[in-house]
Length: 296
Image (tube, rainbow, N blue to C red; front, side):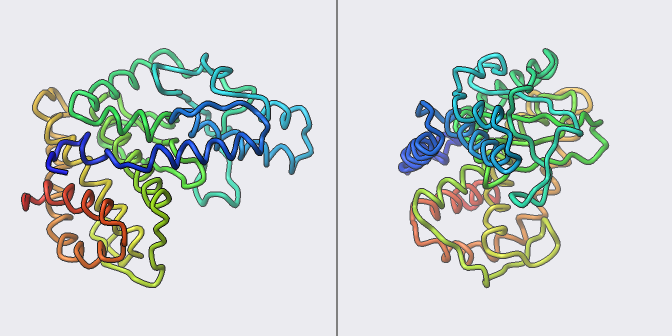
């Protein structure tokens, strides 16, 4: 892999096959006709989790909906290649699948407001302009916008292993900030898919100090942080060039913070990467961090 573009970093053979196989297996369980796209892959996990919830609640009508629904039935929720959702706080769920709140598409899901869809389109366009379009299409096809915040407020975002391809995030009025956070969470989804595609199990008893958390973290979390934050830095470096108004110093501050974090993290990266037997994954994480710290 000679190219160091973001597109090249996330181009990894095996991920698409993993997604298609997983989607096919879920379709077999549900008995519906899901397709083979990244959006089908993300939606399939919503349908599977929703069907399990409905079965446990003995809700036959809802179970039937989850078993027959496909992406073609959800086009009213779409904005380009993405499904964009704006769930209310009361609609968020908590269960054994996640320590954090999450949302599942259901029969009552309504389209996100036009302003939310416009913001997502602008954010995706900004990401694509700087080489991250494929990452968001393949690993963040379902976007859940949560709380609107000011730039000076804390923004929370997350992704769940049980809902690959879905991103949950707070947002501001600035597309560049949303693009940054979508890239961060899509990067987590990418790495999870990559590890699954290459059948990699990371040791739970190996930990490294994470400057992002200020505490030792298992190698899984440490590598996830290195990968996801490196991609946000690569994006922000480019996006700041055209940024105006209040978002410009916001992006600059992000880069300054990350410079400090990576100065510490890079000392442990080689040892952490040695826990991954798949050279293809090791190389991509190493090169991404190398671009951030200027070693490549």
